[in-house]
Amino acid sequence: MDTMLPLVFVVLMALAMLIYVVLDGYDLGVGLLLRGADDAGKDRMIASIGPFWEANETWLVLGVGLLLVAFPLAHGLILTALYLPVAAMLIGLILRGVAFDFRVKAHAEHKPLWNTAFWLGSLLASLAQGWMLGSYVLGFRDDAIGLAFSALIALCLCAGYALLGACWLLMKTEGALRAQAAAWAYRALWFTGLGIAAVSLATPYASPRIFAKWFVLPNLFLLAPIPLLTAGMFLFCESSLRRIRRGVEGRDGLPFAAAVLLFVLAFTGLAYSLFPYLVADRMTYVDAAAATGSLKFILVDALLTLPMILAYTVFVYRVFWGRSEDLSYE
Image (cartoon, rainbow, N blue to C red; front, side, top):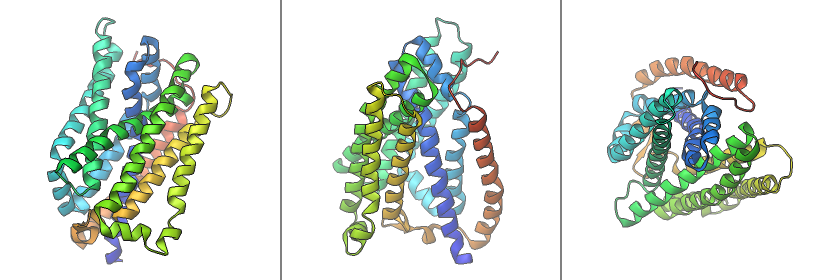
């Protein structure tokens, strides 16, 4: 049992980060798209994420917290390599939080300022997360190739978040804004696919170990369903969005479900590639794990905290599901 504890925390941490990427990804995406809408559309977009966005960020706190307490050596190595983009992300998230509350109470002449601040915070946080992902995948390379790849993934992750945000708006809005969201989602989908392809090609290029995990027989055939399902989900999402853009009535939730599954499949492939390393080819989860006694103590706390966060998340989404209404604190 003691030997399984580090693996349990790896699974919990991965689950928390995946949920964060999906849930906070769509509300970051809504923020990224904010500048493309008129004033009424901006209000409706903000209202669509109003009940959810703060709770969504809880998963980031949980994931990073588990990394800190369960794998302190890896936490130190990762945060040391990424302290600048981490700082940029935190500034962006703080700016979003301030702008979200102030824009609701602001006078009409000040509202554009807070709209811009919300967009800028969303952009800064998304770019920083994409840069961290690109740097992490290549093992924190700081040469020209590493920097260029990190910049590419930063832009593509913004597109991925925009895809989630636009698909979210398809479910939460109506009329012209819904049609605009379909166009946003369709364009963002292609850049999201570019990012997934770039990471998929870069990971085996960066590590012979990862290359062997994917392309040595019989793994090549056993793992083929992951890229095939990813490609199939991409095509399904593209087809669903194209039908909506043509005015075909259907289930507005299908593109969002397809986009989420696209992220889940990409995350699964990346997790398989990196495992058992928390830092590519440098530190395994066993090497980075805290003492067994510490892990046992932390596990009790995690098993108490995680169900409460899950229950609250399910409750909030169930209560506020459906088309959004105007947001007001009055």
